[in-house]
Image (cartoon, rainbow, N blue to C red; front, top):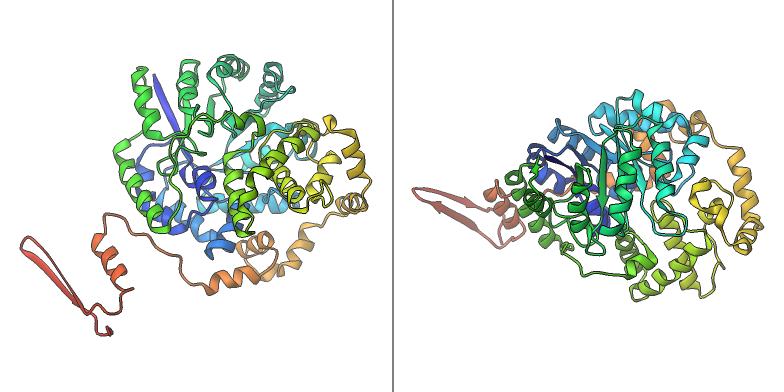
Length: 494
């Protein structure tokens, strides 16, 4: 019995553990080995929100990253979170922009599979019925996610119905997305058969996080229940709040009599290099976690917690993270138990942070909460279960009228293109300006120069020389090995 793997190292692994801070050079250092490892698909960070972070925080060109993964991993199916929004927190842009954005990634060769979250499927059917056909016309494989949640609403019957709705879109795969790492073995035994049976032959995958310490056990149970494709990551971007390690899952699968379709020898250099990069850049290293029942109470995904800690640290209030998480429990209940996944999890935690920071609940309210109350995110978001007093308060705000009016007068593609430079700029430049809301941060990115490089163990001499460049007082270097030797002098040394 074969077991297949979807790699999450570059996208969800980096998002969960490094707050999405993976650089172009980090991917370049290991991409050759990832290409040869035999993954069914590999997630790559080419979505709009990842592009924004790369420009803003790393001062690197995301289109160059896209070209890099296309060049270094030509035979690997490259997958990314996709949809009608481009930037998850923002209102969807014109259809032409969404199609142009994804078409450009396909043309480059950086995207072969679109992963769409179907917990807002009713919204997709109502507002964006064109999105999946458009992606199929681009030649993209379609993987639709059923997001797992624990609440009075999310029963076996709920997931059976959602699976049938997903099948109607004729996807290439369905995956249960356990973004909070909440799935237990007992729950898997009842839920996964329901999904597999209602999938009507569409392959079912499992994507979980190690947040509660149970994901490795759940993966083995999933194999027994008929799931043949698992989402894993390469250490140090595995475990903790990320996905299980590909090495441990492959090893345990063999004990079940399975044949893991992955080349672990090709992945060992990836593991070694990423550990070296983590040490060099002082980045977190994923490790198995103890069982955490608190995760079932607040259900905040690991990637959101990672970014929350990062943001609170920058705001110098990192010590209040537990208060924010505690507040998010009450906010979620008041909103009608939305599934804790993008964009819901982010704006719930953001609102919770504002409530804690101001000391008064809902004194300041983000636009996304008002849009939620207006039903913009669809019935399945839970807004019909909202606390009525909160709902009335949000809908009665002057800002609610402004947002409703803005929705009616949505900007056209031509108007947006004219605002971002008109026909004189390339598609890539236009899209980047849209994502970054202008040119200021793009200019700062370009002024920063070439991306930082991270040389692998296959280039030790070059790595040594690059490090010695930083030491101006070194006059010369002499290297010898066996009968060969090399001397290099530095004419600029002090």
